[in-house]
Every structure is written in structure tokens, then in C-alpha cells.
Image (cartoon, rainbow, N blue to C red; front, top):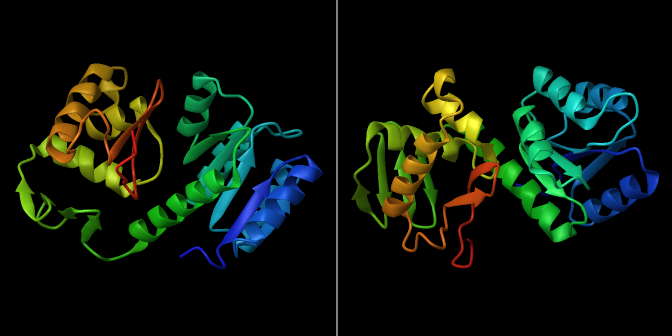
Length: 235
């Protein structure tokens, strides 16, 4: 999935661009770089990258505006990098179209894991397989059935719709507003209690330990993420 994937790195600092390029090329990615939003948009149109990594602080066009512009023209996964860990800024980036948000400083292992999650989601959305399978969980989209360790899970229609939506965007942090609007509609965009109730119900049905969930992870103050490779230690 990952070897040879095209990664576009957008950052105005030459040393950061070079560092990311060297480290990602060592992981068998094909990397191109851009120093500005305008250069990035031109590169996306010409090179069709598989993932775009965007720094928030850019000359003439900041990372938020660039993310909006990219999303207007392409479904390519976007990972935002920023030294700003403020929750409101993170929500703004995600609601502008970013798929993930990584706070500096970060390790290359973390960034690589986020890239792999973005690529997995792209493959899932473009594939024709109607059944999702991951670590004991399977969901048949044609039958609207979910099974855990082959045992049928009884889901309400809303629980199923929420689960399906999160699976379709596996690995992506989905804000409260995005989930509420997608499942309940724009009128419910600020009704966070709906989401808390249904996420709680899904966790009770999917997770062996709701205090240490494997599948539906919380990004505090921002939203939720469906984990693509659940492990016992996730929380």
C-alpha cells in the first residue's frame, strides 16, 4: 500500500522540507515538496499526490486556506502539521477539510502511522469490496450487518449509520460537528449530547473494555476516530 505512494510536503522552512523528504524517502515514499500554497496547488494539479502534508504557517496563503483550496479540487488526504496544539485551531483545520492533525514536535514513526492510515482510508473508499474487516469486526454494507468475532451485533439504524460513516473515514479525526451533521443533519450540529450517547452505545456493543476502547478513539475536545489497526493498548 505505502511503497511508492506520492507524498507532497508543504512547508516554508527548507530544513523541515528536506528533513521530511529524506525521512519519508527512507520509508520508500516518493516525495515532492512545495514552499507555498500556490506552489502546492500547482504541484497537486500536475503530480496527483496520494497524501499532502501541510504546515499551517505559510507565506501569502496559510495552511487553513490551502486546505480549503485543496479540498475544493481534490479528495486527496491532507495531514496538517502545526506547533499550535490549540483545540480550536485543530477543529478549524479538520472542518476545513484536513483528514488529520499532527502537533509539533512529532516523531517520524507517528507521522508514518498517520500517512498509512490516510492511505488505508483511500484504498477502502475506492474499493468495491462491500465487507469491511478489521481485528475481529466485520461489517457487510449490503446487508447492513455488523459482526464481532462472527457474532451478530444488534445495532439500531442510527448506530449502524454512525458506525458505517466512521469506518468510511477510518484513521481520520472526525469533529463533533462533522459527525452530527452527517448523521442527524445540520439542525443538530451543536447537539453534542446526541453524539456522546450513540458513541457510548456503540462502544458497549463493540468494545471488550469501554474504558480502553480499541475501535472508536476519542480526540479530547475535538471528536472521534475509528482506529484502522486496533490494539490492546489503545485508549
